[in-house]
Amino acid sequence: MKGMIRQTSAPLVSLVLIMLGTSFFNTYVSVRLTMEGHKGIITGFVYAGFYAGMMTGALRVEPLIRRIGHIRAFALFASVMASLTILQGLFLDPYIWLVFRFVAGFATAGLFIVIESWLLLLSSPETRGKVLSLYMIALYLAQASGQFFLSVIDLRSFAAFGIAVFFCSLSVIPVSLMRAAAPTLTHNEFVNIWYVLRKTPLGFMGNLVAGMVLGSFYAMGPVFGELSHFTPFQISLIMGVTIFGGLSLQWPLGHLSDLLDRRKVIIGTALTLTGTCVILFIAPAIPFWVLLILLFLFGGFSFTLYPLSITYCCDFFSSAGITSVTCAALIIYGVGCIIGPLLSPIFMEYTNPKGLFLYAAVFAGLFSLYGIYRAFFYRLPSKSNKEPFIPSGGATGKLTEIDPASIEELEATPPPLDIPETEPKIDTPPPPQNLPDISPENKPPQT
Image (cartoon, rainbow, N blue to C red; front, side, top):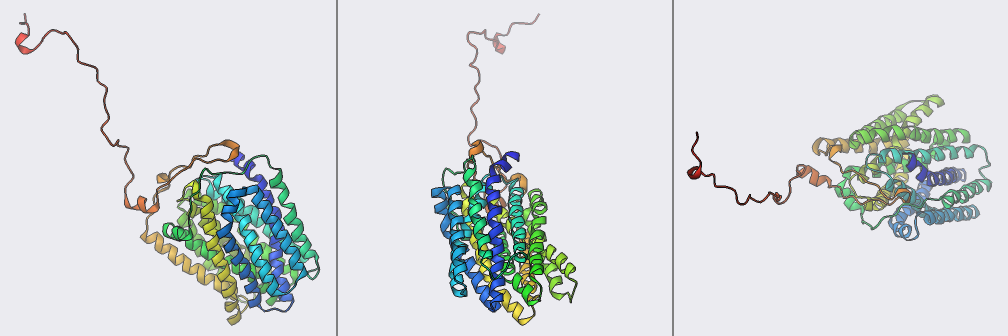
């Protein structure tokens, strides 16, 4: 584990740096649009454009990453993010921002795929939950910390754009200075989203619902704060505490999913998320600190749904398909993130600002019912039937190819027995030569 942390420390540090800037800026976009007098549906469309770019990037960036490598791809996407942020500061029109956010989403997809595939390639089925938990901890720690820039700067000044550009540029340094090479594969295995749906439908739906919930929260969480008449510092607390909640449960649930059936952990997470959202919606006027506790729980279970789902998907693919599975999962997640900012404002419009949590409760609840249905009617093999993941190549991160059996084959057929296809040949010694005949006819008389 120490060697794995040493190999992945540079990309994780780079991830933390760039997320400090971009997570703050994503929240700032919603706050600034609301401050300029635009309605929630306009904010939703701008965020939907961002996630549409993310989905498009997930479809297109994999060949680029394989051609130029993980390190140079990270530097490329970080530079694009910095350039777009500067341009956004020069044009404050929401429709121009929609175009810029689309391209920013494309670059963000590249950043996520670079880091996620890097970590997944250096993990095994037994450690993927813990490794992705480390990734999500670093991601959410940076996202939560970045929210507090909202309360220390003038939101109408150019300083907001400068902070994002600074961290984007700084993030290139750790991966550029690392000694070890990024992981490589000997060949590719193409995996599309429909194959993921057919092979792991629960993982597919988990990624979709995670995108619908998280996309709506990132887009409309600041709007919820503004409409509830909270101060900028309180909005920072709302966003930061929610993301810290997601951070707090990454490792426990990831480790639990390595020990138990991942499907049960996913279902339990979705059910708890549903109950928390129902309480947030129906609760009357409550003290602000109670709201923060509930939002902490909301973040704890909503933010863990995506890593659990993507880990579940990766359990049933070979190492050659890990990057493709990551792309497919991000596409599914991106579709959910497009739907979320478009649907959640409707719930908020016809109920109240807390309609954001009613929206999350509805879809998390439907996913929970689907997960229970899958668990009741479809039996999965035990972890002892899964083939081990065998890394080789030391610090270079090259992986030995594995080809685990599909779920359908494991369900339909019993485990194979170690019986050779043909009867083995037994080397027997030749019969002795020139021995006396001791047949009954020639047997000497007994005395």
